[in-house]
Length: 319
Ligand SMILES: [Zn+2]
Ligand SMILES: [Zn+2]
Image 1 (tube, rainbow, N blue to C red):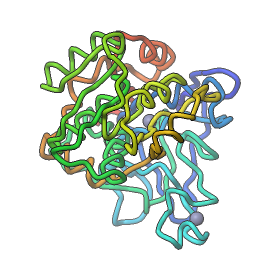
Image 2: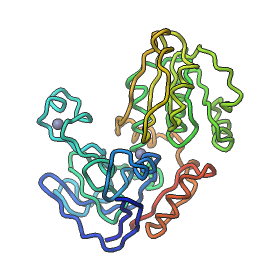
Image 3: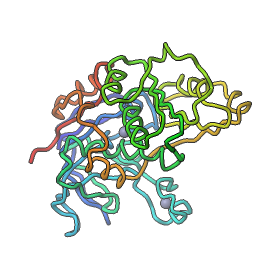
Image 4: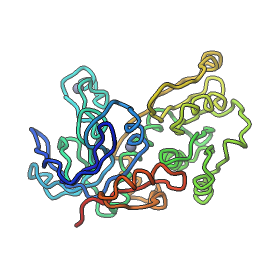
């Protein structure tokens, strides 16, 4: 079967062995997959991953239990043991024995077929097309922000970074009615915000003033945290969404002096993302810059790293 793999370099192959499902797992034929910054970070050594890349997808169950077979699905990426202390405490995304689709210890979805635990599946309502369903995973991660930090209409919130994740987080925050500003470098995506009615500003125009209640760092760069520190008010909250290979070079003394809360934030609730897409509360369609076949996956990868693209999708299966 066809797949995009990474070991010491990114490669396309059409001769991956057909994967076999284990206990409690099923085989999903991948329809569409999304390329994300995490995939790029993995190719720079993040997580030390080797195998089939990809963790954002929509597909159809082709092998598994009768309950799921034939269903169009999206899939949570943390595959967990249900036995460790974290799982017992209801924190299974932090399972101590977890594998993560296309990120850690488990092949991902840039392939004709992917194996996932059935308990990770969510059925996709027909109203959400494949092109939008593929955004459920990163959109769920955006919803995690408002699960972790109370955001009200009087909250002053800033999103640092106007890339793929920043635009999703911005839309989720905008939907709460809070006072929101997106601060980024890319004129194209800042313009995209303006079109959505989301206030935005170039990072070059920002006078760093410590007066935002909540600053969500989505820049994907080691400088993002420092920027967030300059923006957040004393006793405010910084939410860190970016992951990147390599250390942050931030001086954390302002966190101490200003008694800032710094919160890590990762995967989030799929149900909230599916709900938002069903009622069209979040626009992902205009974030799609291109749709490539899996054979052109390496070109798609390159394209998705360019500043003139937002989201690049891989069309893998056909129905
Ligand atoms: Zn991702
Ligand atoms: Zn566990």
